[in-house]
Length: 381
Image (cartoon, rainbow, N blue to C red; front, side, top):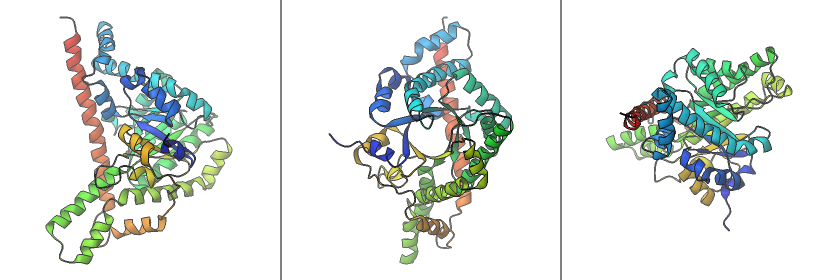
């Protein structure tokens, strides 16, 4: 029998979560099998995943009709569908949560992306989601926007597990890590027990390379006279996201060694792990597992869509690589400032955050519209 490389990755201190959830995989037993036999120890979801799961899927019709009979609004019907799936997934993953003493076994659900820039609404919805879903191994996803981080800090102080999403720049990760520390410190000051709290910082990968590669391709298409300049440009393609992530991991280590973190660790606080997200390779000329292979290492999580899970189980090359070629990573990011390359990484990261929120808002609105149509179809005349 072939070795499942996902199980090998676990030996290096990295957890593999799945970036997918639907009622089909819950009811068919597929999710249970992935958890019990294939090495999956957590689930992440987002509005795009729920749109794909719910839109045009008859498996939800009976619950939609029940919501109609109960006089629920379309938004409340959506929540009843999503919350049921999340609760059931939490229950399937509960044995992992118990066996790992709360390290793994989490299921993430995002607050509505339409409130990404509203701190108070994010706090309110995070508290409500956590209370209504009612599972210890639930993580609330909060975007790492300027408004999201103070919300995250407060929600951590409240004792709620959080997955901070849409982190692209190293600075955005560092700000998130310190927000986590402040939230824990606030909790301690209020006499709360912090040793069961968990958080991950979802650091996005492939979207960075897609953005930068398109800029390089545009420069190459215009035409480059000097072969050395052409070589410089080509050397950057497909390399920035992994370099960026390796530098973020170095910042993680610095923060973990800080006096403020050590004081919290002494009180039983759990580290906020870096979670590698957006890990499906967009360019077919790249390895389909490059965002897994290059970032295996301790105290990290990688969340993979189903196709990448299958690919990785089959042919990931497993080794501890998150701290290899770190010096080259710093040099690579510095090289973007070279006048021959001239790519403003901060601008790229800002673009990606705006685009990332839009990529969650659009499917959320689309799903609500298709659900509204289904409610009309299923409603008695």
